[in-house]
Image: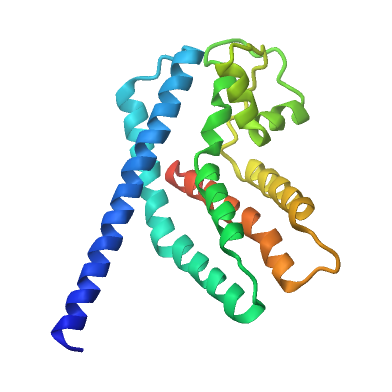
Length: 213
C-alpha cells in the first residue's frame, strides 16, 4: 500500500471519528434538554450535575455500540438488500436505527409517573395501565408538556428484563402489521425483524449502563 492510499485511509478514519464525536455531542445535547424539560414539568428537582452525568454515561455507551455494531450491521443489511434481494433497504434501516436510539433512553421516560420514595403505597396501577406508560411514553410526555396532568403513579421503574420482553413483543407486533405483505418474502421478514432487534439492543444498552445485567 503506497503513501497516498495510507493518507486517504487515515483521512477517512479521522472523518468517521469526527462524525461519531459530533453525533455523540448532538445526542447528548438533545437528550439532556429533553430531560431538563421533563424535570421542570414534573418538579422532580433532580440536580443538573446528576442529569449531565447520567446522560453522558448512556450516550458514551450508545455511540460506541452504534459505531462498532449497529452501523456495520446496517451497512451490511443495505448492501445485501441491493445485491441479493434487489430491494432498497435504506428507509427500513433508518427507521430501525431511530428505534435503536429511542429505545436506549426509553426505560427512563416513564419515570415522570413514578411514585416518589417515602410515600405510602396503597395500590399500584393495573398491569396494562402500567405498561402503557412504557409502550406509549412519547404520548404521555406530550400530554404532560401540553398541561394535562394524570394522577397515575407506579412503583415499577421498567429497568428489568420483563419490561424488555414486553417492549420487544410490542415492537415485533407493530412491525408485523406495518410491514407484512402476503406472500411474505425474505425481504419482508428482515424488514419486520429489524425494528424489534434494534429496539431490544438499545434497551439492553440502557440496562447494561445501569448495571441491571
